Image (cartoon, rainbow, N blue to C red; front, side, top):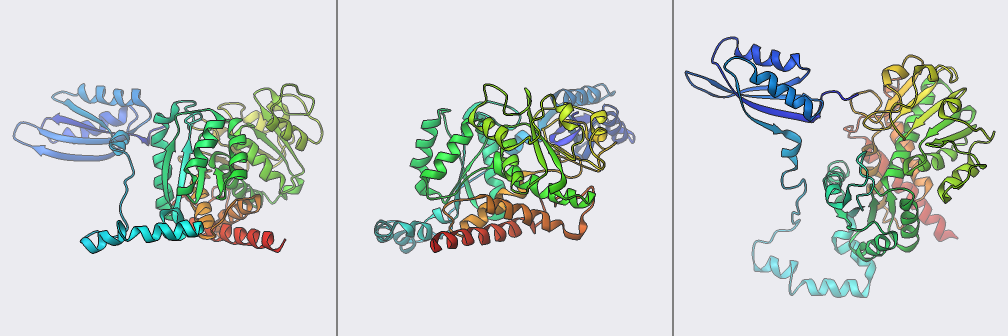
Length: 467
């Protein structure tokens, strides 16, 4: 279901005849093959020809080729060059290191570096906690990946994962002024990842695990949380769960249902699905039924890993068996973090009245949103070209801003739920079936999440000290 979008934006430079109809001919050719024109610039002209840059959103690399072919087919038109604007954005990477202090003269150098810096080193050696106050540790997060489960691309390795981790770091800075740095590890060995992150930890005040495949990601996160004195957050799990919980709270307000009366079907029991289920259970739904590639998860199944066994033991109160289609019958909510095109409108019709459908597989959801809307009262996806985009950017920048501001040493479910409530509350009286979560560009989101997480973290610290 690819559609033209800015992720496949191209600029085509062409030579064209200097005729009155040239602009119309060029734009019509782009439109006829399905391109979405976003800019038309005459960058050169003489008596014999004009040079034009045509910028358009396309659906794929093949679609871009269709556009250049259509333009070349016009009389007197010749394509000089095609530039992929996404690749141009990535030239040289998306991050840089910039000093926060002036280094204009010998005095500045003496304080920032030797000899003055030695006194600061000695202060930290005497009181290690001062590292949070006197170094970049105060505001810095490591974005750690082994490249084993990158977006929808799978196991593409650490080098290929780097553009995603750079982007993540840029989002941290943009939305919450957190200094984050990509740490892509050339190993997929659980023990080596844990050892490496432990060795790197002194530089950072938080660890954001990213795109590490299940089930290894569960053990890596759990053991790092146990061994480190800084928060460890796996965004594929908890970032997704936070935004899903925020969206679900508001969706149930739209349909006027109480979660305690709702049966929720979760398709996909990997990193995201498992975290959603664990956080969902804190809201006491009537029941949760988990479904994976082998069907409904239940305690009678064989060959389950520890994560799947935990899910089986804490869900599916009625002991249902069968397929996703059978699980959907009579359900109030569907949450999908699995695979594309698993069911259609006819299965949504078997759900309870006013069902809620979150089809979050990317780029192609579990059900076409247009089909889902035939029977569902609220539909959400992970895509930016439909209403109600469930996007982790709503969560992780504010979560880490709050953790850093609280000088938190760990993170718990209360902090995650506080973040979810904060995201949901930003919608306020703007709530409707097509607006259950705020825009990722809403400037109120990250500060609200940060304040909620900071309060929950400080409360948790106070409770521990009281004990």
